[in-house]
Image (cartoon, rainbow, N blue to C red):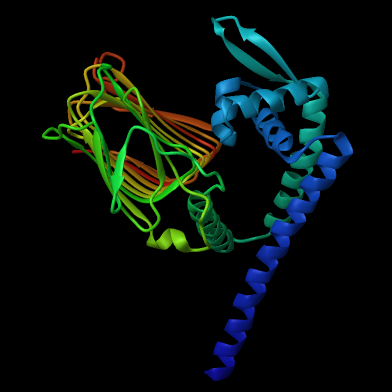
Length: 370
């Protein structure tokens, strides 16, 4: 038995080592292709999306890569100058910009991705269904580990500032302003967040922080929270934020830079929009009743995300970039690639509805009706 355990332990170590070597080999390939064609790594990510889809809007490209609008504009400037992309006005909506792949982009994409796909098919062809299932499950689990880590290893070295908010002993609040709506923004990622609407609250918000609190800026009913620079490895495990929002005003909520362990009970709120940009892991959201179309966006990868919607709210969800283990009410999907749409009955006729978009890959996504 000891010999068997030793052999299994060695095999486990070898599998882990080979995965590490595979990641490094893929990284070296990307670096070589980027150097050969005068691209940087961000450009190469954009090129890969263009190769798979042919054309996207600039906004969709920003969502799938997790880049800000300014950063995606800079990347597209470089790619257009290098002959890898063309920007044109969308003939159906002149306000939108379409990004089209060029012959050069398709050539590079075929060399980087096409040859790898062919080689992978050759390697996997002789495998049995049982072996393929084991390989798939291991790779899926490994990817979820990386996505989970990426979602919370996001904190910046920016100092930030605190204006318009009262903060003492780990607590923060600000008076309700005169504008008719409000906005909550996390700009540098966050970990262990509890978020709720509170109809009894007289202030704009009230928050309680454990560990190093974020810097808070409040202006015109917009709350911006940003993690401070003094952040040590693994310190995120000791951070938490408990935030209550005034339910008397409608809210737009934008959580950027990665989100890990978010519990958001928004049922008391009037929600205008919700977005999680830059990766999200271990997220559970209770959505409120709505009387119009409300967008929900998760970009840059999503893992272990649960959305609860009220019985009267219809929903349509779009997945871009592939997904695994996705449940939408009674629909259960395994692995899907590319772009996929699904909707609740009566969505097109409904006035109160949610439009949800996952981009950049998704796994363990659960959407149900309460």
